[in-house]
Structures are given as C-alpha cells and as structure tokens.
Length: 341
Image 1 (cartoon, rainbow, N blue to C red):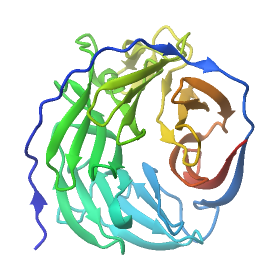
Image 2 (image 1 turned 135 degrees about the vertical axis):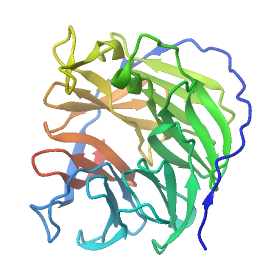
Image 3 (image 1 turned 60 degrees about the horizontal axis):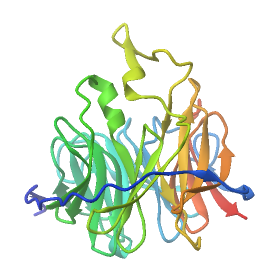
C-alpha cells in the first residue's frame, strides 16, 4: 500500500547578517550559440499539441519529462523525441494528478513531481514507476523545486498566505526541515500581486543556493545553513514593482503606469563553468518577449541573449543541453545545445 507521508516538523531559521548589495557589472560579452537538437510538439514527430507546458526535466539518458497541467499529465519522451508514456493520469487517487507544475531530478535518476492541484509530490523511481506520495506545506504555492544532493533534501521556493520565508527545505519524505529567505511585508498588495513576492531557487556551491527575486532584479546567495553571503542587484532595475500589476474588469490582467510588465522569470545554474554562472531570464513586453542574462556569482553579467517572442523560459539544463518552453500558438519544447564562448 502506498501512503502519503505527513507534513511535519520545523527547525528554527537563524537570521543572517545583512550583506551589502553589489551592482551587477557588465563585462565583455561572451559569444552565445544555441544549436537545435530537436523540438517536441504538434509540428514535429508523432505527438499532438500540448495544451500548456509547465516545466520540463532532462534525464541522464537524454529523455524528457514534460508536465502538462491542462490535460493534466506527466509525459515521457525518449532521447529520439518520440512519445513513450504518460506517467500520471488525472484523478485524486495515489499517483494521480490535477495540475502537475514542477519537477526535480533526485538521487538515482528518480523524480519528484509537484502537483499543485493536490499540493503534494509524486515520487518516481529510476524506471519512472510511481513509488509514493509526499506532502508539501498546504498553504505554499511552489514556484521552483530543486534537489540538494549534498544534504539529500528538496529546496522549494514559493509563497502563501502569511508566509514569511521564500525557501523551504524538505526531506524526501516531506518533513519540513527549515525555512530561509525572509520575505518583506507588503500588506498593500492584493491577489495576484502577492505572487510576485515569490522567487526562484537554484543550487550554488557546497550545498548553498541562490534565490532570484521576480521583482526587484536581485540574486541572493546563501550558504548551506541559510546565511546570506552575497547579493547582486541590477542598477537601474529593469523590473516593475508588484503593486503596478492590476486586474481590469475582473478578468483582464494589465499594468498600471508602465508600458509593459517586466520581471525575472527564473534562474538556472550552467554546468561546467569554472565559477558558478546562471541564466537569468527576464520577461518583458506585453507579447512576452524576453532576454536571458548570464550572471556569475561575482555579480558580473558576461553575456545577454534575446530569444524569439514566443519563448517563455529555459526550463531545464543538463550538461550543455537546455530545454526551452515555447508558449507560441503551438506550445512546444525545444532542446538545444548551449555554447558559451
């Protein structure tokens, strides 16, 4: 019998000493190339169009796991780009999903899929067989999920009603171990505005992590004990304050006093660089156009790449391969080889 593990436990977070921010400096731009490997969508291969793509994971053998919350389904595509299987179906039972949103590769080529519909994680073994369910904090809306191999734990960034921390550390059975990254109190924000207080988490060195705010444009580096060690900021800040984001006529989202909404859309560690280097995508424009900044841990922007209008964000990276979510008229996943020279 497979049962959900309860959400229990909490260690007290130790406040760190505030650090002085360092302005991100532009250095001589390195050359960037994205060499297409393959694309998955209705225009390529056998598989019909996705409804909506939430996130992608790249496995060791080059296969892709794609989360589609509109079906909903967790879909596997082989190294050749062909559809292999659906790993989860719609439902409320063990191993079933309502809205799969985020995925993390964990030890032994296993996976954890966060299902936003049930606020729980589904664990799959290396053969992609469902193993068990783990509980996440019920109030927390996850924005990014990563695996910390140094401590065999999950780091989840997110937000929720009354939540005072941006990153939660969880054991692989769902036990809450600690909370990091104090979030500011913004009582004037309402509804969707509050979601922009959430950020994105990515690995750093020696079990540490990086937290990328959506707005302002800011990267905060923390050691394994949750103490802030470095803070990189963009000056002038290209992003918009969450208070500018409003609802019009109850359903239409718009922006007040600015020509287009601009925010940081994620962060990915690039493997193989001598110093930890990150892709920081920035969403800008009503049409969803974005650029990617390449920023080092020493607060240097070494390159910038401007992608096609429909590209939403780089979703996963493994070696020199990057999976890109395309939210164009035909939702697709593009796998490309990244060369940073």
